[in-house]
Image (cartoon, rainbow, N blue to C red; front, side):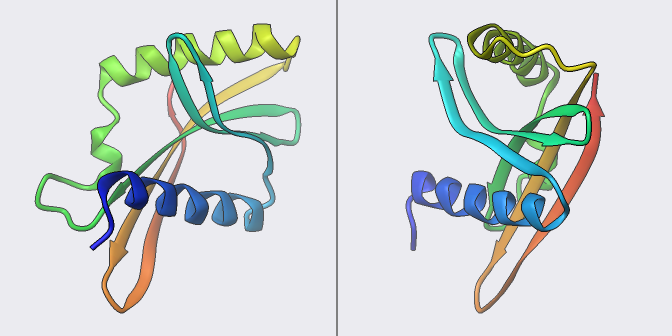
Length: 119
């Protein structure tokens, strides 16, 4: 049984591969600053996409995407501004996506990708 950290790392690998197959270009993974961490920063066309990845083993506490609360959304907006400042990026479009990964024993993971999950 993987630890919570190992499960999260596994889910982020699955999410990055999924997004790449969907045509997004992953620019950064696990970017950290004093305010927290961005799981995945990607580009899709002219849009910069900030992706929060949530991984679960089951739905006993709700679907993984439900874990991105309004408080977490506010933190992600702040982190996105920090990332933009650190990378001197000025994208015409910014988007916040959520990728939920449901890891199932002996079966492929289920991936849910919510594009523009919040503003």
